[in-house]
Image 1: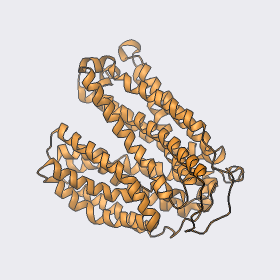
Image 2 (image 1 turned 90 degrees about the horizontal axis):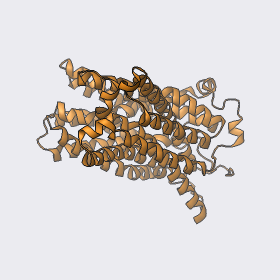
Image 3 (image 1 turned 135 degrees about the vertical axis):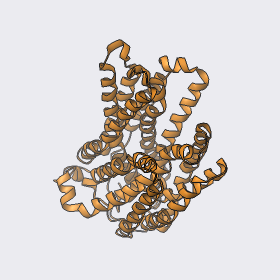
Length: 438
């Protein structure tokens, strides 16, 4: 794609129907890979209860789950490395190359897990290979976010970038919901003994096959980075990023820390919170969260469109302000909620606040960096903040609860929301770098 002349911040170029069609297809192809990546990443957590005995043959089921959770956490810790590695590839070799390699690695990790011999067959090599597969998947998903966010922001139609970029989180949440759906279907088709014996392998095979489809779609994409940006002396360089763009990097790090923390608080941790603190049954809590996540997914394009009207900066300021004011009362209300419907309403309100951020998460970061370090800046800042604050959310919440001070966690999230608000004041009123059409 050729590079057009810079456009004023609010000018909307005229796109032909063919150009619109090509760009929408590119968004679909890029986001389909994102859905597959997150499906493959989450299916591990949902199937762990079935395959844990095959790899960690201890008499204590809790010890088995702790071991599988440890492997899950190891995959999480690979994200910053993935953010750096794939950000560098995307800035030096191209966005398309990075996205194809990323989804291929996820495919390889899923295939390895699907075909792994058990502990009874090869001994200690089984959990070691499981860890290896999970590290590969963690590396892949760590690189997926930054490159996909960058590509989708660059290929999206001008004047509608918030709307189109929001589909990154539509597919991220969609991957999580699809993983739940596949497990539910398998539970209807097979009994527990069959799932523990071999049925747990099916979702990983499904994930690997869909990853191949996503890879083929991504191979058809046009490259959005220019030869000039890829050959720039700072292209994909951490030194160049931190030397020339450290204020932008710290800004992104700051609001991503709060964004990741509140996202994981009201998504992955909330199911456990409803069981442990609101005293719901596991099945009821699962049903509530499935409905809430579906509604949350559907909200993303609406909040993305809102950002196209009021500006990314205003979206982020609303996110920080409403999060600061809303977290404590919502969490206290959820403690004493009397019905699943009331809990669902409160969680949807919280997720609406989070949507001010997640709908534009990718583009608000991409607009902070020039093309030569864009994927690296977005991916590395996200991965560091996500691993440190998002990845630790559940642990911190449960630690406070165990210590008898559960409410401290509410104030911790509130404090991070206040920081996100203050950091968002530094955002430019208009996109500084994403002013050219590719």
